[in-house]
Figure 1 (cartoon, rainbow, N blue to C red):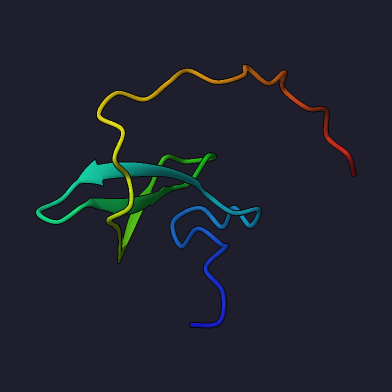
Figure 2 (cartoon, rainbow, N blue to C red; figure 1 turned 120 degrees about the vertical axis):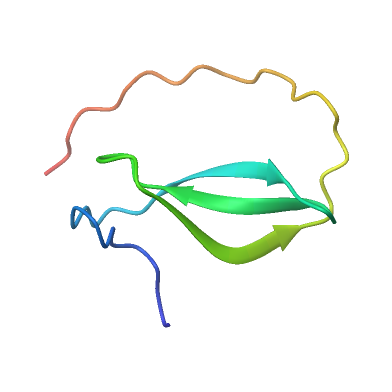
Length: 67
Protein backbone atom coordinates (compact mmCIF):
# COMPACT_ATOMS: atom_id res chain seq x y z
CA UNK A 1 0.00 0.00 0.00
CA UNK A 2 1.45 3.35 -1.03
CA UNK A 3 -1.23 5.53 0.55
CA UNK A 4 -4.34 5.10 2.72
CA UNK A 5 -6.56 8.09 2.05
CA UNK A 6 -9.81 6.92 0.41
CA UNK A 7 -12.64 5.32 2.38
CA UNK A 8 -13.47 1.89 0.94
CA UNK A 9 -17.08 2.21 2.15
CA UNK A 10 -18.19 5.60 0.80
CA UNK A 11 -15.33 6.79 -1.42
CA UNK A 12 -14.49 9.89 0.66
CA UNK A 13 -11.01 10.85 -0.56
CA UNK A 14 -9.70 13.56 1.75
CA UNK A 15 -8.18 11.42 4.50
CA UNK A 16 -9.30 10.29 7.92
CA UNK A 17 -9.75 11.33 11.52
CA UNK A 18 -7.86 9.18 14.01
CA UNK A 19 -8.63 7.83 17.45
CA UNK A 20 -6.51 5.98 19.98
CA UNK A 21 -7.72 2.75 21.58
CA UNK A 22 -5.97 1.27 24.61
CA UNK A 23 -4.14 -1.91 23.60
CA UNK A 24 -2.12 -4.50 25.47
CA UNK A 25 1.06 -2.53 24.77
CA UNK A 26 0.35 1.15 24.14
CA UNK A 27 -2.51 2.39 21.97
CA UNK A 28 -3.92 1.21 18.65
CA UNK A 29 -4.38 3.97 16.08
CA UNK A 30 -7.82 3.72 14.47
CA UNK A 31 -8.75 5.64 11.31
CA UNK A 32 -12.32 6.97 11.04
CA UNK A 33 -13.94 8.29 7.87
CA UNK A 34 -15.29 11.78 8.62
CA UNK A 35 -18.05 11.32 6.04
CA UNK A 36 -19.64 7.92 6.82
CA UNK A 37 -18.02 6.96 10.14
CA UNK A 38 -16.46 3.68 8.95
CA UNK A 39 -13.41 2.73 10.99
CA UNK A 40 -10.22 1.00 9.88
CA UNK A 41 -7.54 -0.70 11.97
CA UNK A 42 -4.22 -0.90 10.09
CA UNK A 43 -2.52 -2.63 13.04
CA UNK A 44 -0.55 0.52 13.92
CA UNK A 45 0.33 1.05 17.56
CA UNK A 46 1.90 3.88 19.52
CA UNK A 47 3.78 3.20 22.74
CA UNK A 48 4.96 6.75 23.44
CA UNK A 49 1.66 8.09 24.82
CA UNK A 50 2.11 8.62 28.54
CA UNK A 51 -0.67 11.07 29.42
CA UNK A 52 -3.44 9.34 31.36
CA UNK A 53 -5.95 12.18 30.90
CA UNK A 54 -5.85 14.30 27.73
CA UNK A 55 -5.51 18.06 28.10
CA UNK A 56 -8.12 20.03 26.16
CA UNK A 57 -6.55 22.11 23.41
CA UNK A 58 -7.75 24.84 21.08
CA UNK A 59 -11.18 24.78 19.47
CA UNK A 60 -10.85 25.38 15.74
CA UNK A 61 -13.64 27.02 13.78
CA UNK A 62 -14.99 24.97 10.90
CA UNK A 63 -13.20 25.99 7.72
CA UNK A 64 -15.01 26.91 4.53
CA UNK A 65 -14.72 24.76 1.41
CA UNK A 66 -11.76 25.97 -0.56
CA UNK A 67 -12.51 24.55 -4.01
